[in-house]
Amino acid sequence: MNEVVVKVEKLYKEIEGRKILKGVSFEVRKGEIYSIIGGSGSGKTSITKHLVGLWKPTSGKVWVFGKEVATLSQRELDELRKNIGYVFQEGALFDSLRVWENVGFYFLEHTNMKTEDIKKIALSKLKLVDLEEDIMDLMPSELSGGMRKRVSIARAIATNPHLIIYDEPTSGLDPITSRLIDKLILQLRDKTGSTAIVVTHDMLSAFTISDRILILRKGEVVTEGKPEEIVNSTDPFVREFIESGFPLRDRII
Image (tube, rainbow, N blue to C red; front, side, top):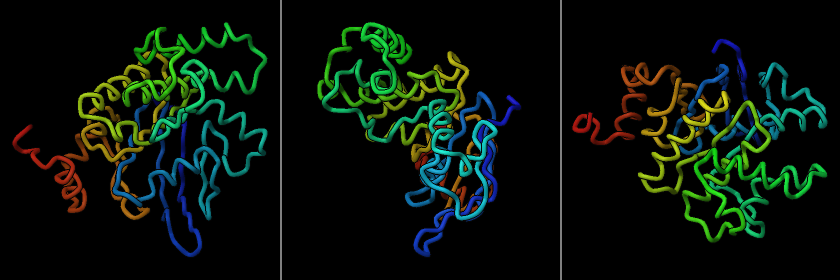
């Protein structure tokens, strides 16, 4: 787990005079589940936009798979993105496409593969997220929230990416389904050997699945460490953040 998959160094981002990221630095190692947590507007999703090349730094550098993202040509960026799976906050499934078409969307759009072969890929990925063949021809509107989330994860892993970015994977889900998604993220890491970056508000999720956690506040890194190190932090903001995330923590643990 020593190979560095993502490296962010002194990342600053300013838009129209507003400082969004202020010198953020961290590394994510191969096979890790690395969670980025913080309140709304702390800069979590802004970081992921730099990782996939949607934004360029005002200053600082971002490397993914050893390549400095901001320097890549469009063709090189497209190649990089093929190796990154992205699970959007609301799932972002295409309402007019069936489940198998959503999962196999990359192959439908960018290859000349036969429909039967794309369906085989879609089914194999759906089974990885504990879904079966009987949903292949359903529309997203016919799925529960948890099933839609799992289909979106299946789509994200369709190209066998080495890095998966989860943007609020448990958002809008009930507690039981949220814990099932946590279990799924862990299973996918173990089954595929992929690296995961999880952007989340869900404190329980972060402390359950993460190898390491980064806490952001107003675009700055407050602390980084293993879950047990974060829990034992004496930093006043970290203590307040943890207690707000686990309001009954002393009664539960």
